[in-house]
Figure 1 (cartoon, one colour):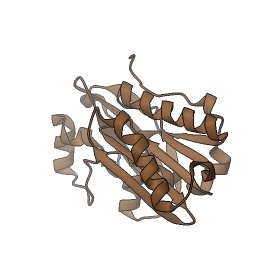
Figure 2 (spheres, helix red, strand yellow):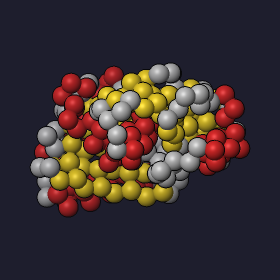
Figure 3 (cartoon, helix red, strand yellow):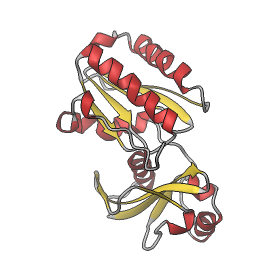
Length: 218
């Protein structure tokens, strides 16, 4: 399948394209410029892969949690493309994408508990706990927005997210439990694509069913 993925929910605007086993990607950390960047990114990827939009079989989008405007941009672009091309979509959690990235860095088949905590601004973080074994990523808690001190770190084997570089409570945990990979990173379309591509058929849904995730009221 030829799959397109986009993510504009965080400070990093990114797009990725999977065509005939090849991965093409674009990304830039330029807050407040996502609306200007995302469509050119898509056009550049299509040109590089030598295919037209009509050859895209499905789209993956980061549905948040993240910035209110950023989440809306991503979902809006995907809605427009999916409706115009009459194709299915898969909406992916930005926090789950980071858990997937952390697991790839750990390179282990053992069961691990991973805590994801990203900066939500206003002295709060978006956080969630996952259990990962093999390629299966399972929720251990609901995604939430809260003070950093309320993030549950008990029994976690790994952690990732910008919250561990911003808030003292999480920085202290990082000092006591250093990770073998860089934790201050953003979710990106390429990771969403790699996480979903082999399971797209099962996960796909109609574009009308996509729900942006904000966690806090706009």
